[in-house]
Length: 171
Image 1 (tube, helix red, strand yellow):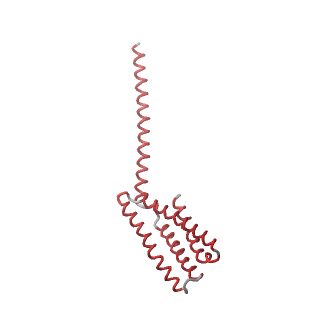
Image 2: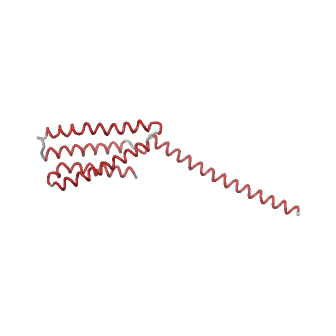
Image 3: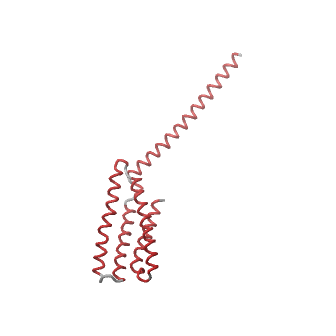
């Protein structure tokens, strides 16, 4: 489901990000394709992660959860360009090696994000437990209603047979 999609998108994004810096300078068309694919992969995992954060958050803390989620993304958008500039400066400026290392840094951050995603074990978050508990309660309630319906039908059947037997006995 969603976890597999996020893992595939993050892996694809990391691989694509690592390739952009080193392969992009070889061809404008290749660079354009890699950047477009990279953008799609980022949107794919970003939307899935946001939906997962919203869906699995404790309903009473959903706003705070989404605020932290968004803030984390914006911090990365602020710090990332600074780090890329620093890497470019340390590696000799605007060269294939410099851009390759800069985008390799982005791929490394994506890999760390994927490890963090696995370690957080989203299936164990409180919001999902509550959802699972509510779902189980609904299943149990439906089963109880079904049992009650069968009991009521059996009682009605017995009552009708008794009434029919009494009516036949009177005649």
